[in-house]
Amino acid sequence: MSEVNPVCQSFCEHTDAIDEVRASMADDAHVAALAELFKLLGDGTRVRMLLALARRELCVCDLTAVIGMSQSAVSHQLRYLRAAKLVRFRKEGKNVFYSLDDDHVTSLLMQGLEHIRE
Image (tube, rainbow, N blue to C red; front, side):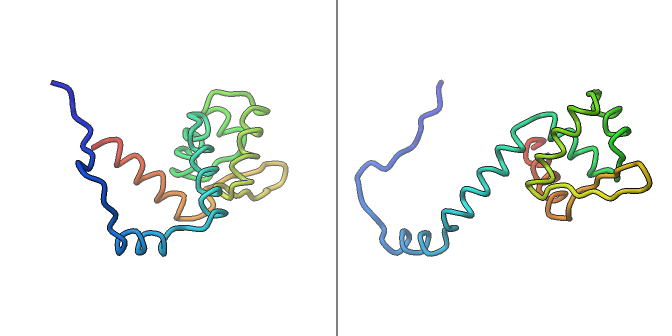
């Protein structure tokens, strides 16, 4: 038996509900930024990189070994993640170490994992 998509049987508008939701909606700029964030998270390589960095700070060479990609490919993906403020870096001598930018990124990843594991 296939699932039925429930819909309203008669058209009506609940103006109080509509007004409440419209008043709490994010503005267009924030909606666009959120869509871009989810677009970045739509790439498995970038998600693997973020999950690795959720465990600990890694230098580019170590991240390359963990992900199994060339250093140039990893650096290319890190540029996107840096631009989106998902990761940050610090230099130590000739090495560059990456970590997640803040606890919000960790929370986003862990909540996403929890959701798909249910």
